[in-house]
Amino acid sequence: MYLGDHAWPDLGDYFAEESLALVPLGSTEQHGPHLPEATDHLIAEAFAREAAERTGFLCTPTLPIGVSPHHRQFHGTMWVDAPVFRDFVESFTRNLTYHGIDRVVFVNAHGGNVQHLREVGRRLRDDEVAYAIEWMWDESIPDLVSEVFEQNGPHGGPKETALIQYLHPELVHEDRLEEARDGGIPSVADADTVKHGSRTFYDAADNTGNGVLGDQTGATAAKGEELFEAAADQLVQLCEWLAEQPFEDLMPEEHV
Ligand SMILES: [Zn+2]
Image 1 (cartoon, helix red, strand yellow):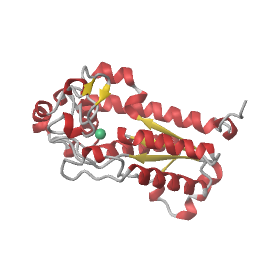
Image 2 (cartoon, helix red, strand yellow):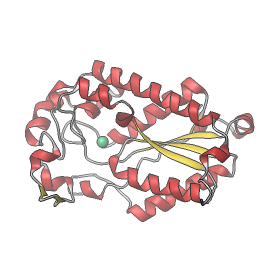
Image 3 (tube, rainbow, N blue to C red):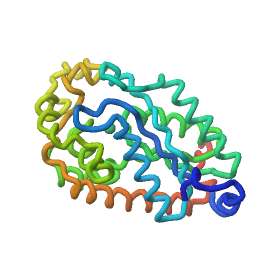
């Protein structure tokens, strides 16, 4: 159930019976010469809406701007500063609790948001207001991702390419996949920016000329569908598990 589609009198039954919400979050940032800047939030929204449709749980509107200053050198990348993002997501989630939500899955598809969503989840749990956890689709199916792609590349690589080919084929520049591969780098390790154990880079532009990693030429919509179905199953199971837990069991342990 997608919250934005319903009139308020029709939402009362949901809040009376259920207390879980899926919140899609992503970014609007460069994803190489071949993918749209919306890549991350389109992926997050697709997973959240799919899981909401399959389970009947509530999906909120998508939060499409995240923490992406490390992509700022490329045209169009949008971001907010990390403290602003954390405060916004915390306030938004606290306000969901006003309607009776006490457990939230942040369906996130942008790596740069992870640590901040974890921090928000910690604040809400420490205050015993809500239990909010972060979920990334590719981390729910690591074995399948490595099986499908030998070199999957973390950003704008074949796994994200395959998902957008499946979800929004009209937004993929198929004729630029080779250009994406040749102008980027295969993996972070290949950029040689980790020196004596220190990560010496801060921005994507420090280690890749066109902003992306991995070999995009192996991506297909069929692979995207396989990954999407497998990860959506994981998200459905996570929601079902979370809904079953007594709220007290989700809260912090007592001091010993
Ligand atoms: Zn991405």
